[in-house]
View 1 (tube, rainbow, N blue to C red):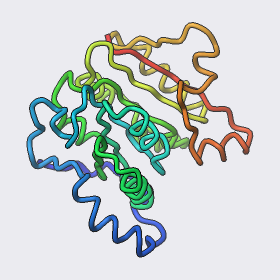
View 2: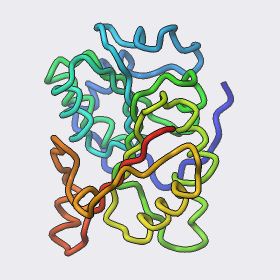
View 3: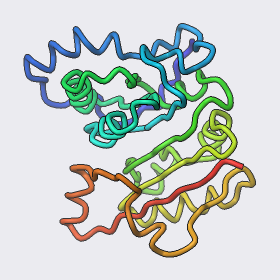
Length: 226
């Protein structure tokens, strides 16, 4: 399929250690989702172990949440998206160490993956601590925008959830404005604790710990597909 070139920033940083470079060569190909092959029917057949539902995490960073969730929920299949090689290698190492078989990975544009997925096939989409692109001229680079929310809505099952966490108050406000303007999502918060407190079984991330240490306050939003 034709790929769009909407990735921004660096995909590579410091060279990988020999161990991680070796795992990327030996293990990653077996985890990678190939968009040139049609998705299986049902989508749960994408995994080598039986799973009941499938979830997607966009921009999983170091993979702390992705690997933790896959470990706690062996009956759920997880597709993690991360274009940055260091984060991808971290996840591959952790997945290999834990022997997880309910995780697949994709290292390119999340929009391409969402376009590839069948409609009504995903139980949840997570977007945790995405780049807020604070400068106005870069706002078009934010993941949360109408065309991507259309993609998320298309793949989510009825009652599926889109979760968004950020330490950027500007991006939180932006996300609330975009989601609350839509008729196909409803914000589930009933009290302030629903957005102030982390999700159940939230492991935290290294980025989040640094943000809190710097005095920034995380916000946790949950929207349901209607």
